[in-house]
Length: 278
Length: 160
Figure 1 (spheres, each protein chain N blue to C red):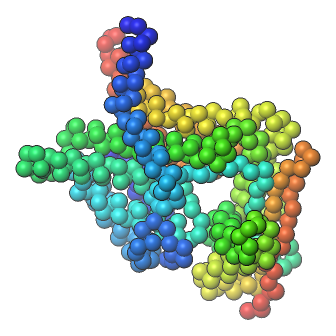
Figure 2 (figure 1 turned 120 degrees about the vertical axis):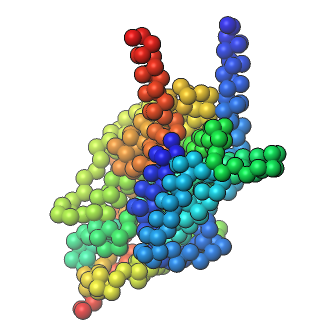
Figure 3 (figure 1 turned 120 degrees about the horizontal axis):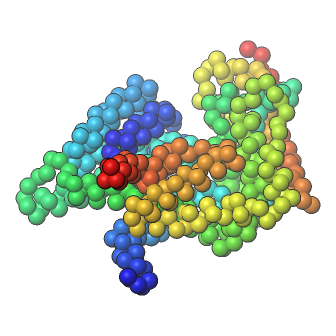
């Protein structure tokens, strides 16, 4: 899990070169001028340094020490990206998960140091498990708060307003079309948009389940089985959003796979079960 | 094992799993709002019956991909336009969308800002093309999707 998450953090950093200005400061940029990080050589060095610390984290060294630098660089990157006047939502979940892992292991490290007057360089199994639990809490909270936002913005009537997603569909498709025009100058409307306008009863059926997955995502913490079900449900939700709205969130899908679906665990369970039958 | 035992066991697992932590963090995120790394993830929360986007053309009306000119998508530029439009609204007692002067100011700000950060050679190519920023409003009227276009920025071609 640590290795997969470290790989995801590095991949996310690798695909973003932070902008070299912060006209409308957000996050850390409210307090600090972080534009120095946007120089290509500096950003490349930051990625290598992060990779080094993450390798130590994967090896088992205390997250309280090894994750502080990755947290800083990742949050700095996201702060710069979101200081341009437009908030993008691709990297918040990874940042929150990093912070949750760092905080939990730092608290465990300090607790052990205070209780037993010993400094633990490596995270024991219990500390690692608590770290994963805190990470899952952070991710689940993000989905639940997304549902809260929908219900608060519409005074609880979000599902009944889903037919209006037709205009959002047109906006998303035509935005993507106009972003990358090559030869064709004529935009085509997504057929689903007109279908939603003509068949308003379809929208709640198509989009309503997504709201329930988000609102009840806390149930994913009830055990590994529930986590896998909700993880796969969230991935399916994102796949539908990609197909319908042309919006991709690979970071969120990867987090679901790593922390909730947890393929390695179920693989071991399956192999053990098969071995017993033999 | 009774149904009550099953439910009690489930609630205990949920409590151990961190249910309260999820609720506390979710509520905290609502109060913190959009400050990286935190967010209340308000995407598609409002579901208004209208939406909007922008695109660019050259002075002949030929559409040009936003990414090719500005290394940025129209969605992000539209968010910036909206932020500035709200800020420039001259009358707080009326919706910002009614202030068409502020809309044009915001559109020109977006174009000038994104143009300024392009490399010199690319900037010259964009200016030579005589760029237009087109704002498109999408609504549903009488059971039909309606798109209304407005030219917000119109610059004459600049010879290199």
